[in-house]
Image (cartoon, rainbow, N blue to C red; front, side, top):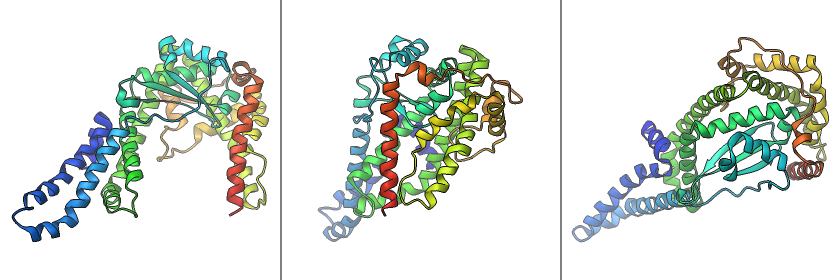
Length: 356
């Protein structure tokens, strides 16, 4: 059953809920057939038929509205970041860029996804998320290679299976909004039915994501500079390990005995980024990233596997960043405003946690 749902989910998205709807209507039809002939059986069967009917309708509602509600994301305008938009347009083309929303985040990452709001009647839109830390540890050449990787996800259409599964998952979320488990019979029943499937959905999502990352890496390398594609990966990989040592692990220790929120992480990250301009330090952390063990629950392959797919059997020596993309593509005003925003969000969240 799990494989059938996953297969239909990958190919038909939210409409895979019909696999649940049709069987749920069977007891309802049987109940209606008995309505005139066996009143006592109808009364007894109502315990099953009524929740089944309610659950079937809730499933249909979830499938319908999962295709109508677009994500509410606040993108940056072309006027506020013209250079960043220009780089994306040079990689993706004017048409694709025109249907893209670019969002800044506080993560050391870049990602892209697609949505089909209003049942796809208005086409698809891409949501490109770019992390401020990523811009801080790459230059324009490396950042262009990263955008080529993200654009490859769209060109390879490897977002399709993930997009369909995401819509199916979104349908389930909407179902639980209408029928919360523990508060409604139909919601509790569906949650019980869905529980064995959740692990399979998660594993399939990881498998699709890992395969897509390797394909996108190769596409980015073939469509541009293969060395720059590998360099971009290593710049991020080294920064990831470096930030763990210099920012996130010390911050975790500070939080253990904190009475008030400590200095926010993004502010700390930006303060130590310049240290990675040292070739020896950069290479040291690149080697650490290469040697890192594979996390089976991660939706990205290990760095060593990704670089091996590009033809590297060992860690190449890479050039450090001299002029970060953060300073060359975004204005100081926008950087300061976004950093304040993310740091304020983090501080508020930690303050609420410490007050408990």
